[in-house]
Length: 266
Image (cartoon, rainbow, N blue to C red; front, side):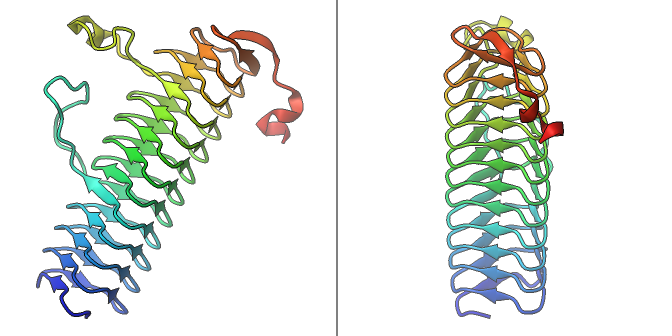
């Protein structure tokens, strides 16, 4: 073991463990074979790191978090943080399950992933991103640099969300979607005023294969149909039919998405 590392006697450490100095491993932690830790890492009680995980410097793996084999956690990330909710928060209270990262996930520097969310295998989360509690992220999804994903959101497999996008609470984005940089989704037409809003909070639904261009804004409760295309800068105030291209503010249907651009014809 490297000098200065503190390992609780109840932790279970696999073979070929390679820690840098000045890390702390709490009770009932399980570390698989061939795991590498940077300096000043804190692995909290009951966390699990699968075989071949690589953890950078100054990382916190929160209590109970479960990392599958070969996950890569960059410097200064916080994985499995417990939320502290304001009294007026719309997030659902109650006990949260620990965070789960599937095999081969990559988490960027300064990223914060909250407890209660589940990431499928092969997900990539960019630097400075944040994913709140009770989110489900499908296999191979990409969450870009500086993206915020709020609570109780579902993102489908292979969907890509580019830098700086904001995904509000209670959004559903299905498989194979593309969300360009700086897209904004919303869920509250009352913008925080009066208790009436709690009965109407609803994020958008973006169906399989849809694409949303840079800087577009999507209003609460909107459905964007499968394979639809929302142009850059559009303001989407009504549902978008499947396979249609919309643009403008407010967005209007312009034409069909060309057949060669559809997933099944690609």
